[in-house]
Image 1 (cartoon, one colour):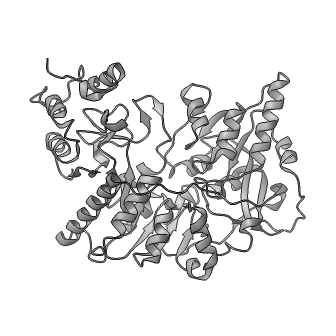
Image 2 (tube, rainbow, N blue to C red):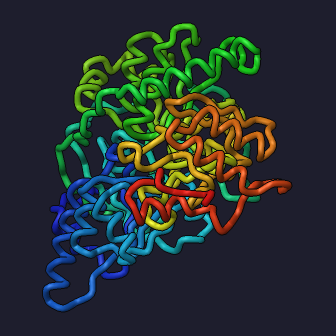
Image 3 (cartoon, rainbow, N blue to C red):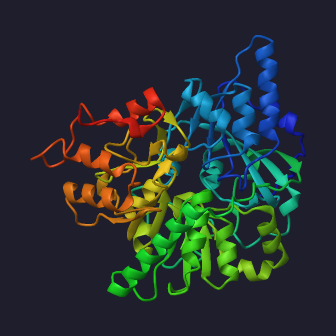
Amino acid sequence: MSVSFQKISADEAAECIKHQDTIACSSFTAAGCVKKVTESLAKKAEREHFSGKNFQVRVFSGASTTDHVDGALSRAKAISYRTPYQSNKDTRNAINQGEIAYADQHLSTYPQFINYGFLGDIDYAIVEVSDYTSDGQLTLTMSAGAVPTFCRHAKHIILEHNRFYSGKLQGLHDIYELANPPHRQAIPLLTPSDRIGTTTVNVDPKKIVGIVETCEEDHLADFKEISPIHERIGQHVAQFFLQELHSGRIPSSFLPIQSGVGNIANAVLKTMGMEKRIPAFSIYSEVAQDAVIDLMEAGRIKFASACALTFTDNHIKKIFDNLDYYRQRLIIRPEEITNHPEIIRRLGLLAMNAALEVDIFGNVNSTHVFGSSIMNGIGGSGDFARNGYISIFTLPSTAKEGAISSIVPFCSHIDHTEHDVQIIVTEQGVADLRGKDPAQRARCIIENCAHPDYKPLLWDYLNLTKNKHIGHQLSAAFKIYQAYLETGDMRNCKFNG
């Protein structure tokens, strides 16, 4: 069925959305994020508030968004509820001040929660597209996120047609959706380069209430220069992989890599990837960042499958200048597929994710500063950590110029338990926790990963309790945080005396 779609302004689109509606915005990082309608919606909220009326919406997204969505709406106090992930400072502050209800969710289960009806109705899906047809075939931009799920369940769809990408992205996407139990079938994906779905998201054209025209890049900030600490972490990861190859615990042909998001992940992947004794490999991950293109150009990465292409402007230009080459080496998939445990286990992913802190028994905190203030969210790290062939968490051993130890007696918040954590890597070294009991894990982490300034302190804590399976003394477990809150330096903590 073909429909003639109406061209509307961002302001007209915003007028369609009512107080307490649920909006679902395309995005996965800045990639594919909508840019105009939510800014107009923020202005509408400000007008409504000025006139004494309530106006807030529930906001769903694929993962993090940009200032166009989270920033603008948070500053306008227009968000009542947010899920599943965020990284915007204004949104973060509002969440930590109790102004926004925030549900931090595993990204692999989030789309099916929507499918199962666990998260309620979606009133409007706002989706950035590079191209569309009159019968509802949508070519997305630089991410897929949860757009297929949003479009399936939304009562109405607003399209932002981003002409900057028009005619450039056909064939990059692989859209595959799962049926709900009991009708779900095995996912027929056997290698990172397999194409199993369609290149477009196909929607009911009668749902589309209008097209908002835009022409704007995602404009990601350049990644920071690789610091000596991050370079050492990457070198330790490379050496670990070489040892695993030599021992036969990783096949000689190597295995696909999953890498997290951000400057540390980009730096670690690039440093590790340039170790030429490691065979050229494929990427199967949530996000492909600049390091992927750099390593692809160097012949180190053969193929990359991701939910989002989170590239800076220069790297996007490289792709557009050589589209035929990259179209054969890149795939953009929905997060329900990139993060699916079935696929992660089948492919045998070597999973690398960043942590905020790790305790001496191997528990990992990825999300909360001092146990209470959200930073970003768990994202997909739990999906890959629990199901990967090998699960690695990377982090510098200290923060705040040494005043904070990233290795602590007991994490102030736990996202990944010791059962799902195999390898810890800091610039100090590698702790291999596989098969170790709690006492062995503690000794391994302190000796190999803790900063020298904190090793005596951590040994003192471990020696407080004897003849227990896990050597915790609850009255002392958080003293290291209290020392920082009182003195500004964890090194002032005393476990003895």
